[in-house]
View 1: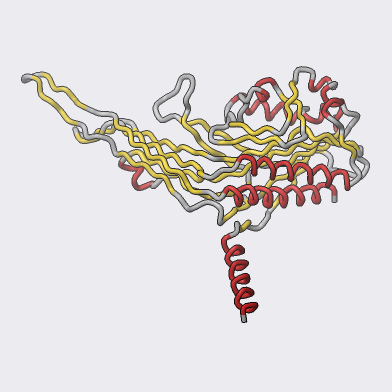
View 2 (view 1 turned 90 degrees about the vertical axis):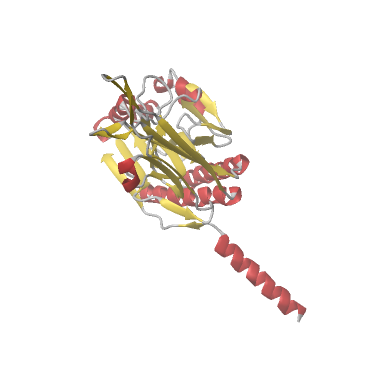
Length: 355
């Protein structure tokens, strides 16, 4: 009788754990090719030029409305700012899962018959003549606002001075466009040439939790900002308040956080450039409490004060509404969700490329 009782309790616990565990949505990947397609005649040497994981932990949304007046009726300036962060993040667990992803990635390449080129050899190339060395394990606040940046243990990469100092970001603008053009023209293909046509692989992964937006009806009458939770792996475009340099009121900057694996080999007309990405994000549920941070401000009303008979003073006020919340997060499930979704993505893209 006791045996049946304990067996029933055990089954209930297993069912409960399975129901409360994180759920990962369907994988939908894509691999695009520019130039030549991969072939079995490629060099069997490979260099991993980057393996970086970004994890979003904080997001702000700001909305600004100018003074508005029609026939003596209106409102002053209005600004609404909402912020949402994650509580319960375990940095050590995130680092451990990134290490596991990298170790398995390297093992997979070796199992396919590839020989890894070390960073010391790559550092001697002309391509990296002005670069600095950066080594994992390393977890730090990113120059992309609201993100942690993680490098795996045992991995070393050659990076620019700005990246080594933590100042390089994925901010949209002229400089970002120039980087993309330079990368498409030569970039890692030049590195491949310097390494005797070795295959160069660049991995960038992004785990994001935020979804920003506003209520369009409320936005008609004032400033409205909103951030809510929606955990997912995939390329993510975020906006963050501009905090440096010349800026207008309520101005935001746009950042595109990539989730890609890129392959480069050879140079000239025979060069290979392939890019793997998710056609739609991989959504992860059961990790973060559903939370929404909202702020609304319709601005103070415009008033008029008569001074004598000929002088009227118009009084407008700029008001600011702010609201910040923190969502409860299971640090173990978050790290596990990162590993499961990223591992599935990398395995599928490697299979697609080499098959």
